[in-house]
Image 1 (cartoon, helix red, strand yellow):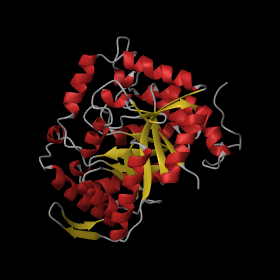
Image 2 (cartoon, rainbow, N blue to C red; image 1 turned 45 degrees about the vertical axis):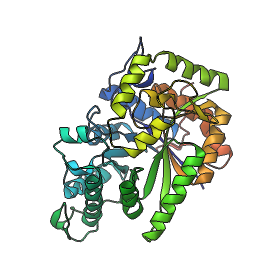
Image 3 (cartoon, one colour; image 1 turned 120 degrees about the horizontal axis):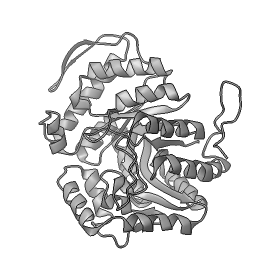
Image 4 (cartoon, rainbow, N blue to C red; image 1 turned 30 degrees about the vertical axis):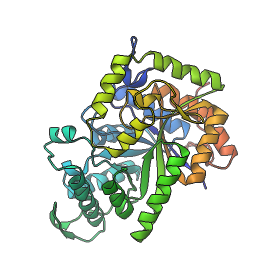
Length: 373
């Protein structure tokens, strides 16, 4: 079975250092011209989709990806958004419209939110578990509105009469969903298409997949699985690890301490699991073969990277796939150059091993789309 490889759209800005830390950050503004470069590179190189994040410090994912859809041909957009901040019927309408204007290139990443401070900036005062209860109702209404028949719903958070769209989206967008708390796992088991985990060790990922498969089976469903990772893939292993040393040198102890204190305030169980991989300590960051936890010292969310030669990185991806991971959502610093490093170095190896489909083909004239020489 082929895997699905996706890239990341840096709508908070980009840099050669992690999230812009360091004495010479070289931060790149997330203006539409730069984001278009990243999206067009991902499209040209054969990535299936780009994940566009959500949060206070990001550009709006819906507006950004709608604009970028005109600059791309085949690239899909995995749009992340918070379910409690818009009506589920409105979200259904937005998704349906997006599918029609892009020719069916929308995927959805529903992010309930694990930081009460950020939620309150948007006027959301529900506690952690209640937010997940609302998410379950939200997805129920969302799918109901896509059904082609007016949908009524009476719940604790939504009272909806006749939810529908002009016409159902085609295809129906797949719903990607992550979360490590018991409340999040129940939502995923009952409502998600693809369950996402951050880049934990293979043993931890195997345990999580087994648990989620069991919960989904109890709900009479099956899940597919994805993982969110950074990548540093080079011609040699030494070259790749040299990049991590440069990144680590750019992180002062004060910056690490400040970032960790901020992360510890959140309610996200997934974030707590990421923090436990390194304990806020810059020593012993290699937590499994070719898996580096240095990102998590200063970056919230996905905090680990696959690091090594192209052969080593391809082998680790195959290992995760054997555990049950089909979707790989990757990123690197900076995102434009790293998209080329990974695609040119690792894609051929994945194809050789039968894990990736054929090269992207320009549908206008049948010519193979190659990276510039």
